[in-house]
Length: 405
Figure 1 (spheres, rainbow, N blue to C red):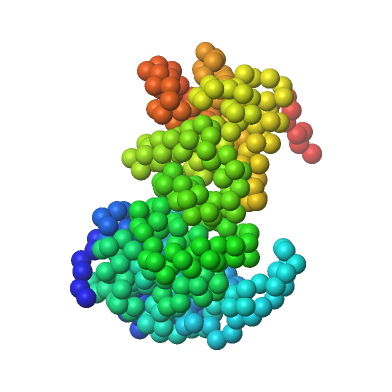
Figure 2 (cartoon, helix red, strand yellow; figure 1 turned 90 degrees about the vertical axis):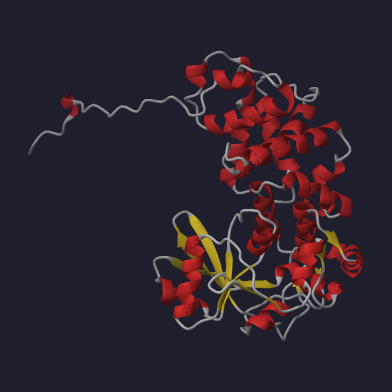
């Protein structure tokens, strides 16, 4: 089938270079979904017949890095952007039951632990999870390949349909449970009956998913602009109690209702280009209402500054995101901007506070609360977007010069 999609020029050039080197190459995954729905892709994934080492030869070793054990692929660096380039796979012949180190019990019988058996483009399409993820697009000739025969139709109808046996697909990789519900939340898709029934039946298997992969999925959700829609979908289907149990336990509370409104406000500003897509800001945004509740504050009423405040903020921040272990840089940044909220709202010492570390992100968090709840006309004018810091070169102290020998 031929279809014209507007692809970023550098992505088109990557496909061209792989093709000229004698390899098949296609855009795959979420970028095609976004393009077909008229959205700008947040990133592009490419699949090719070239092996990882061959991809490095095409683009040079300085621009590429091979990553992964379970699934080896190449990261191609284009400025600040990372493009993932994978090699066509076929369904692995061997799966196995091993003892899960985290829970001390056997993993699902058909769970996949190695997925590096290379194959053709069609074999790669059939081994994928859902039909809407099995579309392959060549921007050089505008050809789209739908190997399962359902992908384009399911895209038009907004249907999440597992490829083949749905229960088996979720058993092979329990993270697919999460990805199915991301499609439901992010795109307002619905699941076909077989896929939905299998998802409910296999939901407990999510405990066997790699903690690092689940934390990476959390970071992707918080970085993106659909967290306010994805997390409610997780709750409706029962996944949130495994993914963010603290949030799930407190779902029907004013704190969580406020948290979703804050996330929606943050995501709108990011989509409009007014804020950066900072993960730490999103993390702080979700945690803030639970901190207010811990201090018995009303919705939107910040806690008073007290010496004990700092420890409580950090404690709630960690509780809210268990069982995930946020990298230290993210948790410290979120903690810092939450600590600054009371000072930003109550202080008139603008010059002093704008010079503090983390001010820019703390201001963004304050503005999110303002556009959602406070609606103050003066806050945005009072606090400048960037810290007004003048850096002066250090003067040499002539008296402390080292004497000549």
